[in-house]
Image (cartoon, rainbow, N blue to C red):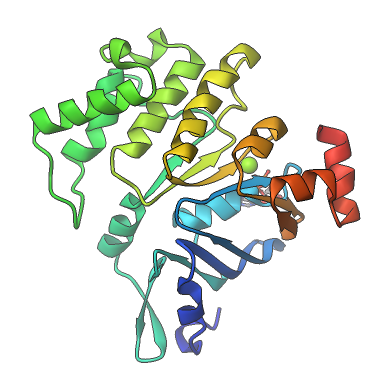
Length: 271
Ligand code: ADP
Ligand code: MG
């Protein structure tokens, strides 16, 4: 709330690719993020787990500037999300610069959110061709198409390029959504329960694509209830409860030897 006169804590916020520092967010009377700090190194994979209502989605949304924080800072690759430092004051960025920042962050949602009237390929190419990409060269139709097919190939769906979302299974739709998120060459990809809306037999095809991304060095923050997947893919597992990070650590440590009672209790229910 005292943001404009805040003296600078920001420079400390430039170590990781993603640096979240003491972030708070309130909706009405409820504080849903109560001072969250988290660092994700370049190429790192952070998996966030925790009960429903603990603030996981809200945290992802603040990283992508879909929600403004009430206090604290988020920096991506050394740039503050939503703010510029001038002198020792913070100034809100103009809308245009916020849009530019948002092109550097890909997000994949639980419900795919594809455009129903566009083919798989058009869903992937729509953003890079139509939307201006401040700071990045605009692609021609032909370039966008070639890149779109390459991305569909990466998620195993090149042969379904001309299918409409309703002709695809949920798992295929989610893989198109991942290809679309990659189309802007984001610095980081955020996943909010990417397999929660899928029939069980379709979960693995989506998790396999995310595993590939993790291996290829893409920086990822993933909210999921798939604990086996979290154990495989995470560098850091973050357990959130009631707006706080209760505990975080390497998967082998946090799953086998959680330090906090709340973490133990949660894992005993979900594993
Ligand atoms: P999670 O993703 O861990 O289930 P959320 O971040 O969705 O948790 O929600 C955390 C809390 O914030 C919940 O109590 C939820 O009802 C509340 N909340 C989330 N978004 C809003 C909003 N836009 N307005 C009011 N309350 C919200
Ligand atoms: Mg959620």
